[in-house]
Image 1 (tube, protein in one colour):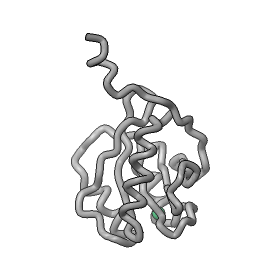
Image 2: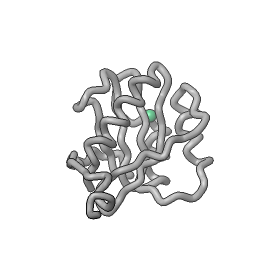
Image 3: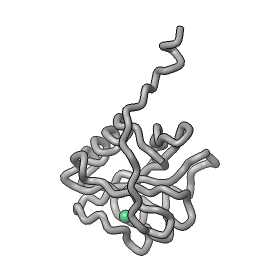
Amino acid sequence: MRIAKDTLKFILEASKSSAPNEFAGMLSATGDVITDVVLVPGTESGEVSAVMQLFMLPNISTVGTVHSHPSGNRKPSTDDLELFDRKGSYHIIVGSPFNESSWTCYNNKGEEVRIEVVDYEFNEENENW
Ligand code: ZN
């Protein structure tokens, strides 16, 4: 699995502007590249509420989750591990200071996995004209 650089940048910026509240969303992929973040509406501050809102989303095709830990400690909490186990295979936690190395991806067992950051051309179809 890989992630588009612009998508990662969006996640980091959204998390930064949400702090000290949590940012949370679902990850959606095009092929094997994570390209979209489906925002979770009405997310409130606090670990539990941010995570719980994820279950209220309609049925959308997603590969995992993303949320922020404004504290900067990117270790998954017990609640996070439960979520990881239920919702997809790739779970990104970002933390302050929200720069390009302030994120970690976990699998559904809470083990760290490396995913590659790639340049992804979002307008590919249009440019073929
Ligand atoms: Zn968490």
